[in-house]
Image 1 (cartoon, rainbow, N blue to C red):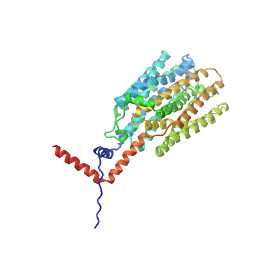
Image 2: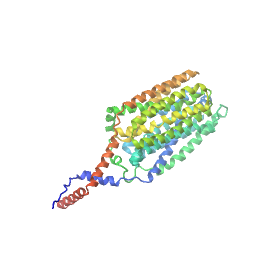
Image 3: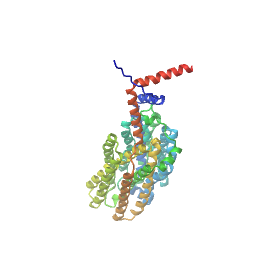
Image 4: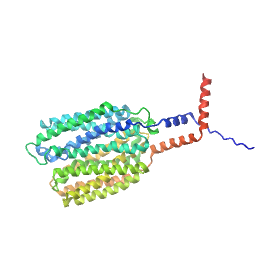
Length: 469
């Protein structure tokens, strides 16, 4: 009778520990409450940022300010972001999500109430916007880390999309809401209407943010994935690595082009469209359609990326289509047809906006094990830098009452998007986080196939402990 003997492969204690941890990975129902609790301050911050954009003409007349000064109410958010980005990244990654998010909430609420002094001096409105802008990086830099800490890999892309795009929903509400309180034409009552708008927003922002302060949690009792359980590099260790990472730098420039152009359109849409005889109300609707279509597009396109993980391919295809849609949007401007303009903005928003959450997750993938807060926060910074430059140039150009100058500004935006497309094409799609999680998953399968090996390690460990005693 012939017998065969199976040779048991040795398994290290470290691998066994990783496998046992893998079995403990789970997600908790409270993660959806975390999403809701974070969405409220994130949305309120977006509303606060864009408050004056759709009523810029009325504000300009009511407070006797230049177009550039009114533009500053939005522009300061991007300028402040550049300077506060590093401190916010440090606090979120090294001190914790809870402290970082609470800091963002505090400054968002403070800014909303300071703006109530707008009728004393328009400078108070600028100061209120500055306070809100200080809070913005603490909120915008958090979504990728929240998704990583609370969600399993299969839901992480979706969670990042929801958490980051909720700010854009706030921007959409911020476009529409002022038109319900402030009249579309200037009158003697306009200043009082603007004050009423500030008061309503301050109350709503405070009421929506307080539950987050009370119920927001740092992290679940146990991690949802290996990536969440992996010790991340510190802020000081991460920066030199990112600066030397050419793939991250390409994505940095690409995202700057994407978000910079988005911020420019959101800030200057009223100035653009008024040159083509669109009313303030029509501008508000166009802006809202731009935002809503972006949310629809993001839901569809990010779900595709979540299934196939082809970040680069999807970004290239989406960027090409969005460039054509942007050109179409420019082409229909002189027709001065409201319905056609809404359709053009719908198409552009549908394909351009999804690039934001996809880029955030892509950055986390190619820079792992660097903290999600640091990688996503830095590319957000690039968007603010590009946005500042584009808005300053555009605001000066469209100050002259000429439709040709609007085309010059939009043409700059078109060139910026083409540069962004080129940079995306240069990125090497090395999904480090996904590969690490796949490696750990395969290791678990191997150990499951050899239960005797695990038992042997456990027995040897017990014997070693007994002999030591």
